[in-house]
Amino acid sequence: MPVCPRCMQCDAKFDFLTRKHHCRRCGKCFCDKCCGQKVPLRRMCFVDPVRQCAECALVSHKEAEFYDKQLKVLLSGATFLVTFRDTEKPETMVCRLSNNQRYLLLEGDSHYEIEIARISTVQILTEGFPPGEKDTHTHTSLLGSQPVSEGGNARATGMSLQYSAPGAEGTTQLKLMAGEDANASRRQATAWLAAMHKATKLLYESRDQ
Image (cartoon, rainbow, N blue to C red; front, side, top):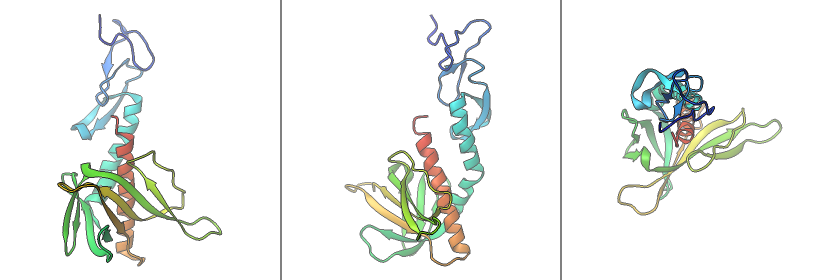
């Protein structure tokens, strides 16, 4: 008896005419109708489009857009005012994603490497402009809980994250803030934060896939 006799989406029975297909992302079995989309899956080294179910294809489309756009921004890096939990004075540092996409690199007078896998919580600090009100600051946790929708006028101003350092007890908190000057450096930092927001949201959405 077949291990998977029916489509796991529409419950159609597999036979000579209704063939069984496996989604290359989640591995579940579907009929052709429920698993007919072909999308690149770079995270699994499938550069050419491969067959995926509708749910997985949606996430893979978002990832493909991320690889084509936001990843370049994260690799290029941006300048921030960086504050660690045990320091009071912020240090000007360039923050970027490592080429192997496994570390956040902080480079200034000091040098830090934070392993992505050790980051437990990411919060994007935003500044909104509701009509008739003062700027408001919101915190959006994207890895520890369900992402919170941001207003259309929200602008990223910084990022706070918690991570566990090798050999250390508990977690360390790190805060990055974009400069106040409305110049190219501030715009680059805002773009980097927006790309990081996209990356952490994708991590949340694909956590079970």
